[in-house]
Image (cartoon, rainbow, N blue to C red):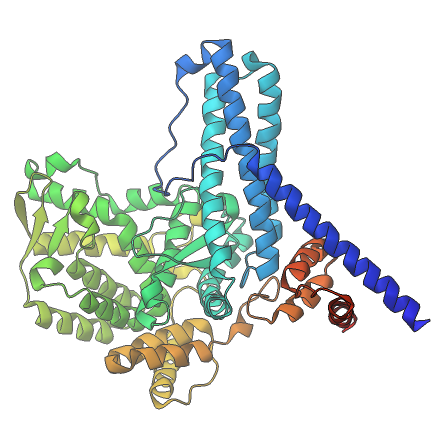
Length: 540
């Protein structure tokens, strides 16, 4: 009887393996028939190019263009299903759920493909504006899929899977207070998850990430295991809060009462108007730094100082405002202004003495400057009194932190429960800092660990790598909820067994099993060996 059961199971496994191979062959062949479209362009956050009105003036040209857009949408759907499958295979690290992708990206793409297919049959039913809107949706979906592909691909290796899993949890812990506040006040904040990508510094996330309900956190690969590199976590969380919360950016601009200026106007307007124009340009970066400092307190100021020192900026560079394309070489927001704003936030946290001490240390380093240099697009420079700049920046930070913003349901940023660091939280960071330096740290909440690691690096920069590794080990990942266990860091057979517990993932498990199982050698001995390994795997 046992032999019959064994033979039946063996036949099922061989059949599934054969089907998976046929599926792969058919899929690879079907991909060769249509010519692949151009690779997605790097995301810059710029709006997509609309359709030309003339394209739709002729029915023949209109139909051709619609067919091209429909085919592009179908290719994106195929890519999206691949990403969907990849997310389930690697577990999506911390919180990236396959259901979210299907609901937020694949669903709209499928609807667009259906609408385009109908429009191809009757082109006159679709106006130029409708087609332009559909093209914009398709372009944004392509940008989101490109990011998600990178997130999945980076989690296929065991080493990256563990590192990114922990960084995801830390980012999610920083995001959670905003999610709870949005749910409690019914704020239409679409983000649900945070995911870290290892990308070079300065990479701009897609403008349509809200369609994936995802807060993208970009960490420099060279700094991914160092606490200073993790400074991107709180800043990118604040970036998502500002960008994805409806009307919040315009509300912050209104609160700081700063007016935008074109590049050429900086040389012509009064000093007060020039300072107002600078603050308007700096608003997003000031908001990111202010929110991050609220979450980490003095630890963020310490990390900011370490980050600036890594850039090896001179005192003049720290006081230079670039307002043209050269800002990619130096921070758009001058280092001196960033330290000024961070010290102000410490005062809002009730840590005035700490703010004065750190601000004095920084001024001693740069020599108590009195002028801010503005580099104009023409190559000329203009000097502005630092007192004017400081007054405008401090008033703007006060407005960002204290103003009850309507899009946040009439709540000030510092009053959102769980956002502002309390004194007891800072004391826990200091205790853990000493433990990290001594090498006997215990598990703690991710926010406490991040702050303690930054304080430890400030105390001993020569041991930054060791501090980073110790901090990763003591992250209390149980403090952050997860959708599913990650499979990227598990052995292949454990991953396969884990997926077999989910009926939805059986097809993917068969493909993975066929890929990972050793090919049987020629002859009966090879078949018997394959039979024993597969049956043993399925019966464990």
